[in-house]
Length: 131
Image (cartoon, rainbow, N blue to C red; front, side, top):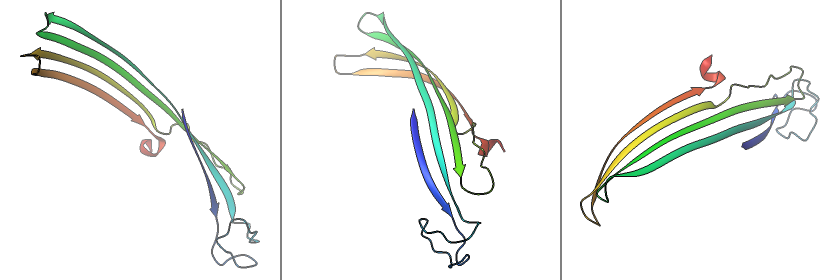
């Protein structure tokens, strides 16, 4: 799991009494100025299975592998402003599935030839891309 937090300050330059400054620690007298925060959480995991087996003694062997990755992102907001900020559950969610097959032929102890195939399917969901 990864986590990132950020703090922000919305202000209106030159407004308020006294005139607005870019210092978020000072009260500017403007009700339109406010602090807000964002908390980003990503829960992710990966599973992988791999097997290797000989086909022709030490000369030719096969490697098969399967991998599944999943990430579930979430972004939550807090504010001192007058309007509530809604959290985003559909943020940086993805799933990736991989299937791989390789055949390795050993010409000698120091030289081999590998041929393989890999298939990946990637699905990404994010509210900004979904509309």
